[in-house]
Image 1 (cartoon, rainbow, N blue to C red):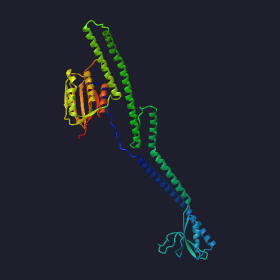
Image 2 (tube, rainbow, N blue to C red):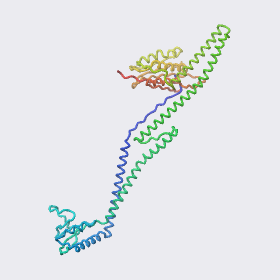
Image 3 (cartoon, helix red, strand yellow):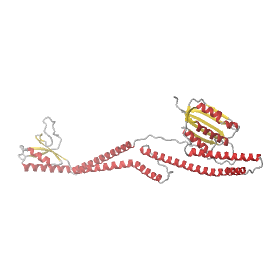
Length: 446
């Protein structure tokens, strides 16, 4: 059961995702709001400037005088009288930036922009500026003129403010999504690095939207590829070590076995006692080769396919632990070792393959006999927690001189068998204390 490896548990971080489409929509709305505010602000400032400019330099008064002169010329040229006063409508329609209303005796005589309504309220404002004119027949009238000055400037201001608003909208939008674009470009560069074969380069994880999920997926894929490469390298290393060790270890006992068999075949022994010794040596070499072949089978179980399919059956947890404490480590007790079993109340049932489970126990017993210190008891602790059967085996490692580093092939065999049964198998060593932890899922109650 002893070894010097340790397992490392990984934690998965979960994050709450925000929809990227919603984020982009909010960004667009914000940029649009900024563009509208900027356009309105520029238009307002420009309107105020134009109003002050046109008012201060007397543009409005000159435009009114020009309109009055034009109107008077129209009256004189067309002989507009009280009888054909509707001709003033023609003049008003020709003026693009002048609004005109005409009065006689303070009452509205003609309004070219709306249908006269006898029920409408009085439209004449006594405080408004109106001007005296005479028709061709000498009839006095009053004209109220409203001039819209510099309309071409106002149209230009509208166009310019809209253009600036659009530019601000695009600029703010690009500024806000630049971070996402930069992140996409960074992911593209990192993918090219991974594609070149450098799987050690980590993927940048930032944010918590769909791009983050994409980056997490790429990072998970990278880790899985690294893990497969590590397992492949480990398998190749173990294969090389096994072939090297087997070629060396098999050659020595096989050479000795052939030598003893040649002596026996040639009857080169002095008496029956020497014959028995030769036969005993042959038996030892044969068992030594058998142990090596067992290691070879264990290797293929870890790095290859199983020798045979699993035949699962349901076993009560209590029966499994009773068999473990009373019979599985019998040879350990026969050789002077002791057991300290602490089994809590077990009511569940586990699903295992008895033959493969026996192989696990054989590997643990072999490891225990090889490394365990018989002056310390083998402690077995079993309990059920969170629908799992937990079995802890702890022993003391005896000090050994010229200890060759173990490949831990036996422990790896145990781990693969337990994992194929749906459980977990871990081992660790703290100083001289070595612990094996097995977990098997407990079946739900029927």
